Length: 403
Ligand SMILES: Cc1cc2nc3c(=O)[nH]c(=O)nc-3n(C[C@H](O)[C@H](O)[C@H](O)COP(=O)(O)OP(=O)(O)OC[C@H]3O[C@@H](n4cnc5c(N)ncnc54)[C@H](O)[C@@H]3O)c2cc1C
Image 1 (tube, rainbow, N blue to C red):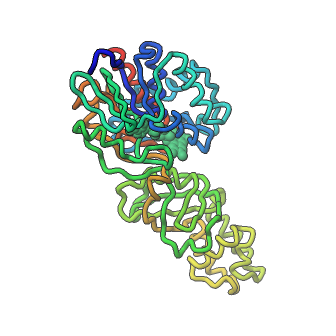
Image 2: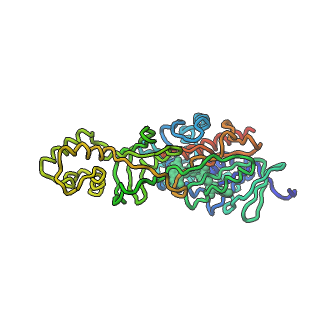
C-alpha cells in the first residue's frame, strides 16, 4: 500500500439495513474513517420494499422462537439487543413509530422514513459512502484490501460483511457475495428461500386463481403438525400466496412430505357451519346452491370437487359432514417454495459456528465481522428480519469500538 492511499478504520461491505444501522452507530466516532461500499446506485434499496412499502421494522414480541437456522446463536444475540433497544435507537434518530397488531412500523407507514433517518445520521457524521462500488474480492495481509468491480481498491483495518443473503430480485442480493466469506475459509449452510409463496398440487386448485380468503392455515409434515397462522390466503396458478402462507413458509425447510390444511370461515365453528348447511338442505338446494353465500362460488366448486360431488345434484344431508370437513380442513400437498427471487429472506447462510455470538467477529479471521441476513439465521414474517439485522449490527458496533 503506497503512503498516499488512505486506509480506513472500518469498511462495511453492503449498504442495506444492517450495514446502514452499523454505519450510523459507528459514524459519530469514526466519521470519515468509516467506509460503506454499496453495489447499487443507492443505499437501502431493499429497505424501501419492506412491509409492502410500509417498513415493518420490528415486533412487539421478540424471542428466539421466531428465528430459524442456528437458534442458539439467535437466542444469545436477540436476548442482548431486542425490540426495546431498536425502538430506543430509532427514537433517538427521530423516527416516530406506530403498530398494527404486534407489528411495528414507522408512524408514517412509509419504509422510506426508516432509510431517511439512517441516511441523515450517516451524512451528518461524514461517513464515506460509495455507491456503485460492488466488492468482488477482499484479502488480508497487514490490513484488509477490498477490490471493487470498477477497478478501485480500498484498505481498512477491519471489515464488516453486511452483504445480505440470496433473496429478492433487483437488490444485488443474489448470493454471489457469500464467496467473499468463503475465500477466507468460511462455509455456507444449505440455502432455501423463506417468506415466500408455495407451490402446491395443481388439480385441486384449478380455477381458483385470484380467489382470496381469510383463513387459518396449518403446515404438517406427513400428519405431524408443524405450525399454524391466521391471515389471508391467495390462490395462484402455481399454488398459494398471502400473509398466512408467507409466515408458514419459514417453517418449511427440511420437512418431509409437507402439506397444508386450510380452514376457511375461521370464525365459524365446524358444528355451527354444519348446522346451517343441514337447514339449507331442507330447501331443496343443489350442492352449488347450498354453498352460495357461504364461500365464493369458485371455491365452492373446488370444495365439491374435493368431496367428489356434482354441483348440480340435489344436496343430501348425509353429505354435509364431508362438505364441512373440506371447508374447515382443505388439504393441499406442498411441492416446495417459489424461488429466491420471490422470497423476502434466505434460510441458511454463513455458518454461525464460525462466528462469535458475543461480537459477530469471525473466529477464522481477526478483524472480520459478519452481520445481518448473511448469517445462518432467518426470522418469521413480522419485523423479525430487520430486528435481526439491527441486533447483529449493535453487537458488532460494541466489539469494533471496544476491540
Ligand atoms: C420484498 C421484501 C420485503 C421485506 N419486508 C420485511 C419487513 O417488513 N420486515 C422485516 O423485518 N424484514 C423484511 N424483509 C427482509 C429484510 O429486508 C432483510 O432481512 C434485511 O434487509 C437484511 O438486511 P441486510 O443488511 O443483512 O441485507 P440487505 O438489506 O439485503 O442488504 C445487503 C446490501 O448489500 C449490498 N451488496 C451485496 N453484495 C455486495 C457486494 N459484493 N458489494 C457491495 N454491496 C453489496 C446489496 O446491494 C444490499 O444493499 C423483506 C425483504 C424483501 C425482499
